Image (cartoon, rainbow over all chains, first blue to last red):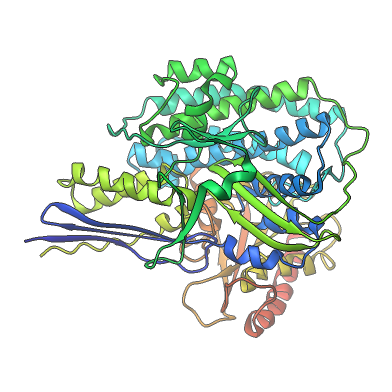
Length: 429
Length: 157
């Protein structure tokens, strides 16, 4: 009898703390456990008794790479509670800001975190020695995203210009025009990115996922839409809690999100893409087709191509918004607090980010709930590993561990920090 | 990028809401009052690509971050990044595996390192959720502030 264990130990001092444990007995996978300690639990308590206006700035601190998502979900949820609908120019600027975040986040993940897995490098630094031009392109692409967030958000990390109802200050038209030049280069670089990643080799894995994403009647989703799936889900965001449940799992500090009837689901770029292919711009659709993708993508390893396609879309959409830019009369609409509960989901780079706030008549937070994408994808990641490992049992220990890490990184989880410091323990009996 | 016209840049790295991880931003905000005109002070989360971008065009950079190497809390590490490799485990960046150490080593590979890059790491005690520094880290922060100011003066002479 032989037992083989892949164990990735817990990490300290990280926003997303994670660990992986895999057990193989007699060439059979007997255990797969992904453990994540979710920091938003703390933030939910931290938000109580705070005024609504502080929420976008506090929640932006939850993640260094997707602060805009936290700001957008919190603003929309609070506006939902107070019955506020922002005007079209503010709405467009929010989409533009979100484009910036997607560009930053996807460029970072594709080039610095995920590509090394496909090209057989331990990390991006080693990859850069052999592929300096590709890495430089990735860094410059990320900077293009930073430039958008910097202009609209006030700074590229933890933006400070977002408020409930809109913005504190809206840049001048001229400043947007300068951004357009950068984005034209970025759009070409994004197309090149899709070509580059499409040339990688992909393990042949397909699963019948339940994809869950926002869907909007007219556009590829960022801030608004109904929550839909390919298995019949079609609900308003405010009904999220009726359909999804966060379960305590005894072995982990993390909460596992499940659909109440069907269990595990998949959120993120691949879900968005597969549910909204028809809403992508023609250029993004063409890039996807040229890369060999159909309108639905079920191979989790091809998520890197999907991220590339979304990079193309985000650049394209940002340019479209800038071409039609209208400065709002005032940077923000008026907010009048009332006793209410508000709900919102927006599409963070790595999937749906759900916020719910209960507020009193002064706009003080009584209760908050935040469900980040990584928590929603946990079981799906484990299920992928249950399928991928048995087919790869003949790989030596280090290669099997790398494949597991690569599979986890398909989801760009906020615990990818953890995978960087993986420690592998092989036990054979 | 907000380096302005200066070539000297101070970057405080960390998260103010994670106790001792806030050492970098704390020191950066205090330094802002003391640095000579023209020296830029930034606060960054520690995401590596943003760091690479931040020091583009700067000739001298001082980077201050909390560290977790196993040394006693309050220990000050000073690394001259032009001369020494930076152990990536030293400065964990929270979310995405591309942090201070990685940014410096990536810059070395791509020939994007500033002419001078000094890294101060303060060994933290407590990285849990909360605001405020541990006593040892607070004391070390005062010392690093003085050391960094000396460095700045030597750069801008």
